[in-house]
Amino acid sequence: MIKTKELTKYYGKNARGIIDVTMDIKKGEIFGFIGPNGAGKSTCVRTLLNFIFPTSGEAKVMGLDIIKDTVEIRRNVGYVPAEVHYYKHMIVEDFLKYSTEFYTNDYEERLHELAKHLELDLTRKIGDLSSGNKKKVAIVLALVYQPKILIFDEPTLGLDPLIQSVFFDLLKKEKERGATIFFSSHVLSDVQKICDRVGIIKEGKLIKVENIEDIMKARAKNIRIQSDDFNLKEDEHIINLKKIKDSYHFTYKGNIDKLLKKIESYKIDDISITEPTLEEIFMHYYNKEDKQ
Image (cartoon, rainbow, N blue to C red; front, side, top):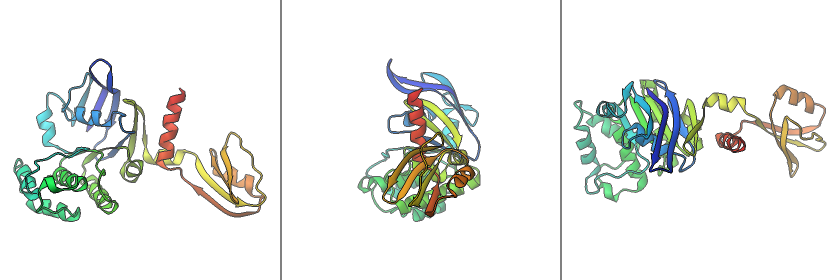
């Protein structure tokens, strides 16, 4: 549904946007696009939507060229920008109705349904809304006509946690409907909750694309052991060993069954084995890239 090949954007001669971004996003998946601010996420989104022209490379959305077929692409894409700027003096409901009139179907019922879910006040002027409520307007506008593709750029920015939860539920329903979702964010916990695959971008370059489940399962485990006679030392599998009060904390890279056999002779009062967070994994990829 979204395919890029060596997509590159420079601003002028030296200002880097994105460099040789190659990815293939399948129909019906939620693809996370993560990286810190300034990594090139918004540049990639704006290039896909033909708001800015690529310097080189190519990209297709639904098999359509992003430059030649931009009108047809936009008919089938819902978009939420990182920063929302709409007509300040318009009432929210008037603006949404005006926007949906560009389409042939009647979306008024769905418009009110989405606004209710997101607790969006339709009677206020857009200029009087907080940034979070402006983001709700953008989300309603993106979802209301149920497009084939949804492209989000920092969609949870400004939303309170309860509304974020509602938003994720709405995205799951869109996925069930068959929509393809491109979810660009620097909030790693959001990506972990909702995405099937994730692309990690650093300084304009896509450095890794993996399934979320594979990332979480294949990586090291965080271990905490509470014991009075614990005596393991760091080795190739046990790293970052430290004692905090009466507990030993370390990262284990290896077969958990072998670890359990190693510690079976110790008197252990308590033990916890947890998955690393996506943030820890994310930093692992960044640090690994820096060393290469």
